[in-house]
Length: 356
Ligand code: SF4
Image (cartoon, rainbow, N blue to C red; front, side):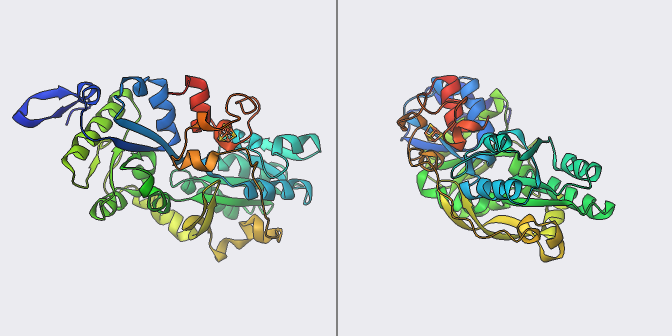
């Protein structure tokens, strides 16, 4: 299939854009799981051309947005009580914990370094042997292999002052947990480039439909057009609309690496709650690199700001603009919730591109 046209009855080809603009089938809710999809769909103006019976819902695929309050509280504990140097991606610095953020903690003397990869954190630790360095490890199947490589490299180089605080997540549990909030998924291309399409096929066999989508305008419009065309037929389906990157088998070497070093664990998703076996933690054989074990962290009870509706936004139960503080008290400059912090967050997309 070409990237911008699709076959219809009678062999006549209609453009994907025409299919979307003229869709007159039953109302369909499409959850764009990936935060990058959310932002690209807004940025490209795709929402504006969709008829009212195609509803796009932002899902839980922004790693910063789903990182729970307790994770930030644990990072603050490591920074302020244990004197660790926290190495992290920039977005996490501004994400609120129960009563503070890493940005505020800097003012209280916490050492917080922004890095661009887990490998940078290992290099920092190697160059600063007098500091205990903890890398904040968040993200999905796409980023977890690079964390494993960093731990492997620290072990090989004997960098003993390096450890990771994990909040890595996997998508299958989220697909299960969210399946009643949507009619079909716009699956995240990056995730399925790693894990392959087996899980999407399995879900389709159990009645959960979806398409794998790329990130260009043509790829997104084509994937949405395929999705609504198939949906109208009324049978569960899966179509890989991003075959140039997503292969059925994924990247077996990356999957093997992660399996050899990490194991599934229950994981809390901000605003959504605990999803069984939806997280990844280091195996016992790598316990010396697990910051929770290394620093004997206590169980933390976090509490998010009661005004924040991130959990409902992430489940497609409300729009960011339904949140009372959206755009008033909560802005990208002064975020109350994680969905407004991250460049991939639904609230920040609504704010930047003017909502619906
Ligand atoms: S607008 Fe702010 S407070 Fe409201 S849900 Fe979004 S991030 Fe949370």
